[in-house]
Every structure is written in structure tokens, then in C-alpha cells.
Length: 245
Image 1 (tube, rainbow, N blue to C red):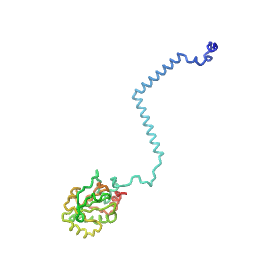
Image 2: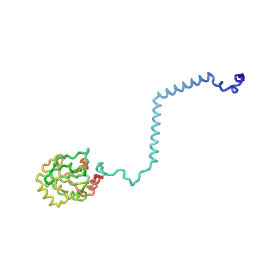
Image 3: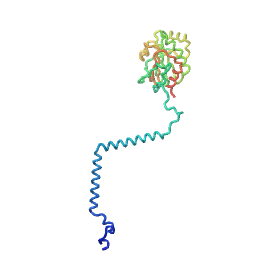
Image 4: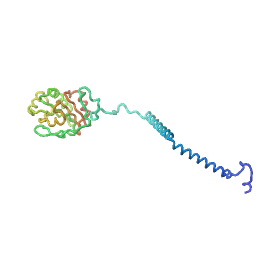
């Protein structure tokens, strides 16, 4: 016991002698000073500016590295299919250059018109894309484009699509039928809007011919005012892009 507390050089003293009161107090003072320095640093706006700048730079570097190592999609995969439903401007060329998309889409009016003596409405065509064309016997451009509408109905008409050519003509169905027969129209059915109620509602009473394309839910995709060749490749491409899959 005496040997453990005997005097001698420091290196010969027992380990517990190292923890003197002075050294402990010095460590406490250093810890307090360090804490004060950290508190003062956190209060500085420059500290937070540097911190968030560093975080932003690290995130940007991560994005760049991730993009560079991510696998590229196959060229055969169509990332963005051209569709009139998406109002794709690439479809508006050639004969369809004057086609104007509806912003926002408008619901087809439920005003009745006549087919073979009975009332129908555009709601009866839900589930199919419909091209509604308003024409009249006195409208020369209307009569000129009717054969192309007949060809469109022949080629694409069916469960997914139909051309609905409506005669907005006060002269009645007999006169309208004579003109269809004279033009040798074989595939278009005769629909009548003799009082121009539907044509007036959609804004087509004074601007014939006018063609309005509706999607399968009865929402207007867009319209074309004036004559067009609806048997053209551009017209077919526009219609086909809107058909239900």
C-alpha cells in the first residue's frame, strides 16, 4: 500500500493519479467553449446558406449521376403515341391543317334530330368516335365533300366509328335524299335537322359545311369549318388516332 502512494516521477505513479481536479476542470471549460462556438455558428445566416447550398449541390450531383447510368429506353418503344385525344398538333397538316382542337372539350348537345322519321340524339352514338357533318342542298362545298365523307364511312365505319352527316336544310328529307342519290352516296345514312336546332346550338347554322369530331364519351375533340377531303391520309390518320383501343 505504501508503495502505491510513495513519491516518485509521474510516469511511475498509478493510473488514477492522472485524473487530477485541474485536468477535469480544464476539460469542462473546453467543452463549454466548444458548445458556445457551435451555438454562435448555428445562429449565423451564412452557416445555413452554406449548408443548404451544399445539400443542393449534392442532390444535383446525384441526379446527374443517376441519369447518366440509367438504362436508355428501347427505340422500338413508343413513348408518346400521336393522338387527337391528346390534341397533338402533329396531326394537323394537309387536309386537316384547319382542324381546331376544342379547349376545353365540350359535351355533345342532346338535342334531337331525325333519322327515318324518328328522333335520335348524339347520345345514341356513345361508345363510338363520331364525325358529325352538317350540310345542306344549297351549299356547294357541302355537296363537294360528301363523297369523301361517304368513302370515310365505307373504310372506317363500324363499331368504333361512324360518320353522322346531318342535313341542316329546311327543304326537308325528300329533297336531301335526291341530292344524296344524285351524288351516288351509298354508305352515309340520312339524318335531318330541318329546323336547324342542333346546327344552331353547335354554331354551325351560318358556316356550312362544318364537321365536329366527338370521342367515344361524347366530348368534342375539335372541329373543321369549311370543305375538306375526308378520304385523305391526313383525315384518316386523325380519325384513327382517336379510336378506342
